[in-house]
Length: 356
Image (cartoon, rainbow, N blue to C red):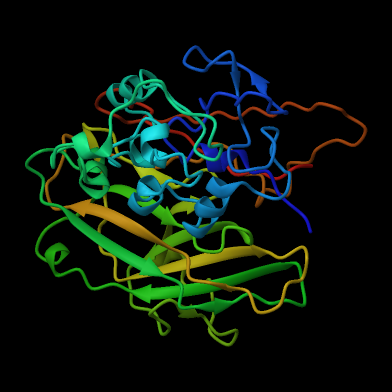
């Protein structure tokens, strides 16, 4: 048997980085942030707090069954059988928290004020906590909280979902790059401009999903409904008609969230194409995947329009080389924007890299 310790999983949980180390537990870590206890437990779902150890504990089993996402069902479970729900132990008794709220200062303040305990160890219980039965209807509802994170009051709300169609990951090689596509008919965007305010990754086979890239295309594609684009069909044809929209890698469930004052104009979009990188190091046969993503969009324009800039791109620049024999090498880039009527403001940044 083997086990992987994935720190990004605990970041998908409310107070996932603030669970106190149970008495007698090994692998505890000293606090690095003000809201953490003096000793906290990084490996919440594992046999030890260090993580990467088997067997996984009862909470780890339930987290795995939930495909490593915080759901209402996982929140309502009492994994360790101590009579307290997982949500009550992690400071989300009403099961309203979602990863989309991870940097919401008001939500963080509420979470960090909670008395947190370990949801996988029955002897670890909070001294005081709010019970789920005490929550009002307005306080429950994870999806509603998520919508409030993406959309502003008064905006019409639209959500489009796209999923890979039950793909069998090859078991005879470690690395697989596969392409999937969907045709998209959004009638509300025909007579109106549509604006994207969020993108969310829905990862199914988390063990083998390495990363993926999403492209939007202005013309319909021959293959649709999340099926594999056949080798005979030019997979990256008409680059001028397709543009990169976003991408996912572990730890990036919320791929895009627009700032309150701006949104990204979708434009003419009739199809979506996904390049998926699967990693199967143990050559497991018969493993399948139905990962996907959600697009949150509106017809209500915001004050500003977002645009992408790529100041450094190594993968397609053959003139950039890392010199041999150097332990460290620094690369800087400059992006000069001219002709603006007013200064541009950087709202977010992202990168994708591999170890050298």
